[in-house]
Length: 278
Ligand SMILES: [Zn+2]
Image 1 (tube, rainbow, N blue to C red):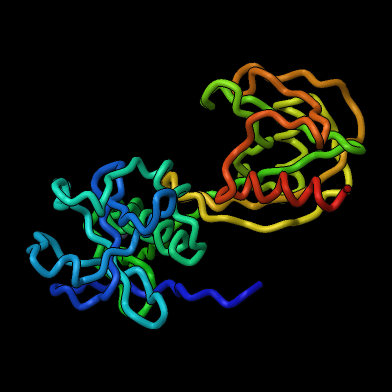
Image 2: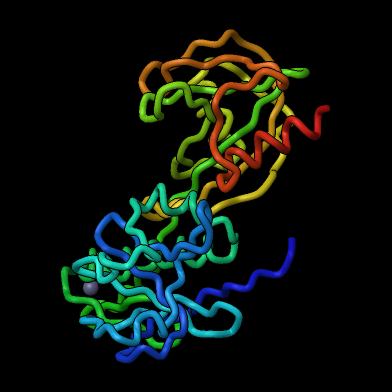
């Protein structure tokens, strides 16, 4: 894996001024993106862009990008509404528009970390207000000494192949005609492999074998980590669960339906699974 140019910070810091050079701007379920090219956007807004604007709130540090501090600010309104270089996008759609992997990581970090810092305010043990810990990414309860760290929800996604066919599914939340891979959350107490086998069986009725790790992607809705695998068909007949998946089919590698865009781990997995079998 190549070196990454975004590094998350390991404590909770606020900056009162525009000293971070790159800032991610979040507004409720939206993010503000800077247009780099017609189909390429950056979530990092430089302080030159922000020089004329007085930000109402402090900047929460999220890490460094090429060694420069990076932060996130939650806006109450779109401060660039009159500037066509900037566009307000729903978070899910926005993530797919950022093709630079380091910038996508910074964006995922900004969304997840901001969500956690904003929502973890009270001790779940005794109900006291929490304070920010020193020198670690944590909040502490001074009344009962409990410590709270950001929580991740692991999820698996798997490309299942059988010869020159790949298993793709239409989820009821997808737009019409779009097919992707089977995915689901890991339950507490499960290994990743157990979660994968259970999800595949529950959603499609199939058993799989030869599970191999591929790669992972932060999935900040609001705090998941999607871990990608490949697997091979072992046994069973396709029976979609009809709860989440309304259609599941084997597709020949040369005759795929509409599939997710290149920035997603689903698409990278599909491309990898097919190229490694051809
Ligand atoms: Zn407490």
